[in-house]
Length: 309
Ligand SMILES: C[S@@+](CC[C@H](N)C(=O)[O-])C[C@H]1O[C@@H](n2cnc3c(N)ncnc32)[C@H](O)[C@@H]1O
Image: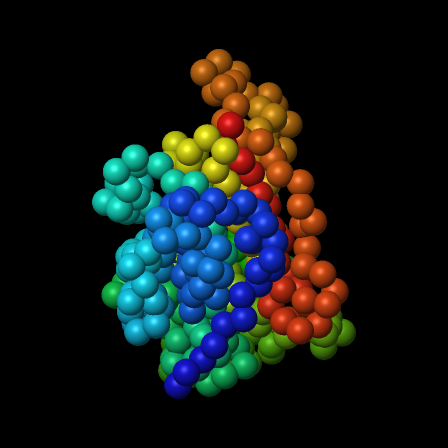
């Protein structure tokens, strides 16, 4: 199936990256290349775009549709390997911009066989990189109630985490958990009827399991810490996040490195860390109403931009 992806906040990304014709850019989350395609339109013949994705289908798409462009290089990898990848492709070991459009792509969500969606029947998989052995179902089978409950609470902010975890384990013991729809039903059944809102109750738990299985928040922290030294002076970091856990990490990171204050602890950083390396670039945080109307994924998107100083 040919699933497509509509790039979120495209104009803000291009504006945020402040693209130089001869510049070198890294799109750390290639997906279906929606942002990459437009970065390539902006750079000249001496510019370069390095794209990364850990999903084999994204790699296949890049090879079919992009690699004939001499300015384009693709690496199937975790984006936290960015330093190694930049060293491989750039003599200067520095780039002019790094883009992160976090989370899952529409093709990943829409293909039931990937197991990301609670609305489509498929295996409980949720791996972005299918070479990883641990599918979501394998993990649910191995983990105990406390561990599952902790993940649902920590990564999904799920109020009924313990009840859901207990019912998941009970269903596994009774051979009742096989597909995404089974999982969705188990979660729905744990919600008191008077607490059912507009959102499907499975939203939070599916998000939590996906974040955990793909180690998403740890990978984000790693790349943010690595990328400062990899961006040339005046170069830009652009990050789009889709839920508050991600956005908090990005916001805090930019704050610490641009004004020396940690938004969580409110403590100024001291000693060697006081050397500030980023300048926050002000840009509207959310997508316009018009974009949200045309692309529902943009509804929860938040964009943050910083410049290396
Ligand atoms: C929201 S999509 C990006 C869509 C893309 N900007 C476009 O316009 O087509 C996120 C992509 O990042 C990839 N991804 C997420 N975390 C990753 C990581 N740690 N390393 C590499 N790729 C990752 C996913 O596989 C997915 O294809």
